[in-house]
Length: 316
Image 1: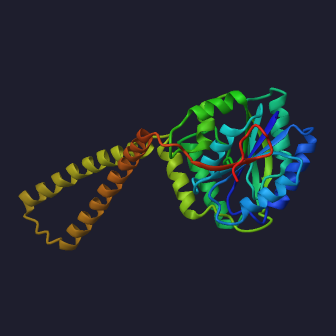
Image 2 (image 1 turned 135 degrees about the horizontal axis):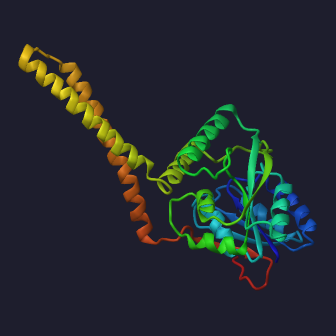
Image 3 (image 1 turned 60 degrees about the horizontal axis):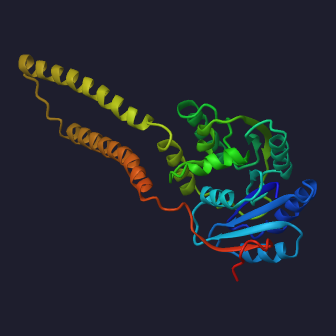
């Protein structure tokens, strides 16, 4: 194999026939040197069954790796990269929101040694308004505060050569952002623009809960800004408290002010109590990630492997 295409699969049974047709076209363009690495990430639908039936009847070189449960798309990508046998690698989603021509462009620039990492740069996205607004807001803030190198619309798909692949797999930290790790590594990069299309079938499994977790992983794994904000807020609060305390003490001594202030006292206690909880939570997030990384658990567990390569043992 010269080219390996890694595709995480989760709740994609409706798009798999179209997906395999696109991959077959790409394989023909790659002179049959393409390998499809499909990672079924604990999908509860019939994705695995449909994949097996259609791939067994195709001429595509393939591997199907089945996770023991749902570990997430980034874990599925890592599993696919570890199993892939090509010289150049690309990642795409199974929902066909990225054009297959983008993957072809990845392999073209990598094969010509123009870069070590080929990265898809979204110039537009055919998504609902609020989803687009939330995504643009997050990536704008993330670029400003954490990682300026990331494109404005974020990154969903990428390609890499074997050197970048091996380096990425050496970074074994858990609860991190694969996209941010790609930019943290460095290497030569080339951006290829594309428009993210609307899903042809089904609905996205990228829920708000998953988006929130991804946001937290992206922030806490690559910056200490939340800690700095706590420190600065504490210093500002200390200065204000000393100043206001001096004013109240001065007024009390010289003017005998009477301050009933029950409601005000309760509000202030609640406010600073919540602020303390927020600070403890932010610090705890860093501590928890350190604890999780100390366990050295694998990112995912493979329960079954299917392939048309006789050198790879089949699971029946």
